[in-house]
Image: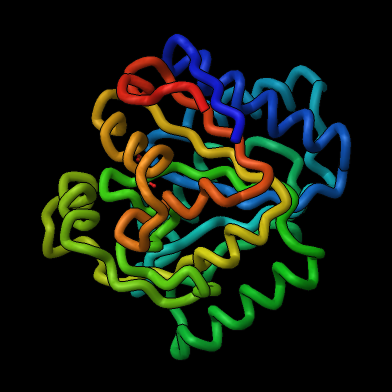
Length: 244
Ligand code: PGA
């Protein structure tokens, strides 16, 4: 594991964007797994700037989002598709056919999961997966207790995760109960992983994930076993970390 501790959120965002841009320079047809949430917005902003400055070209890049809520219209303001459109897809030269996100409205979610997993395989697997970490240690929507062997699947969201989203949705009862998420195995099969965390509220879970025992109760702890993991955190999130 490579641990990179930076001063603040701004530096975290820039360093993360540089790592993604480097990957694309090395391999223009890179396959990325991409997160949503508060943590990566600065990274997307920096990537958009790199694109506008002509430093990076997304025309051959293939992207797969980590997850999407189920039972939500894709144009709902809280859908991850809306988030991505606003922060990234709508601002760079990704080809629409190279952008993938699980469908939020499907009759047969199990079939959609199998289709998504197959598309990842067909693209040649993920070169770089960028991840955040939930306060309960989840990665994507792999909540505590998720099997290490999980591929893309339907996840029941934990009450803790739903409570975190309640304000954004205007009430807990409006937060979806299910999502489609890449599984832990899907993520672990990525050739490289970049885990991002910012802020004091992530400090404790990050220390558990990186220094504690590998346990399904802290899904991010499996990342300790990944052969090519970079962890980028700001000082506030790194408070309980020691060098590795
Ligand atoms: P956040 O979410 O970036 O909004 O903190 C991270 C996560 O839940 O994976």
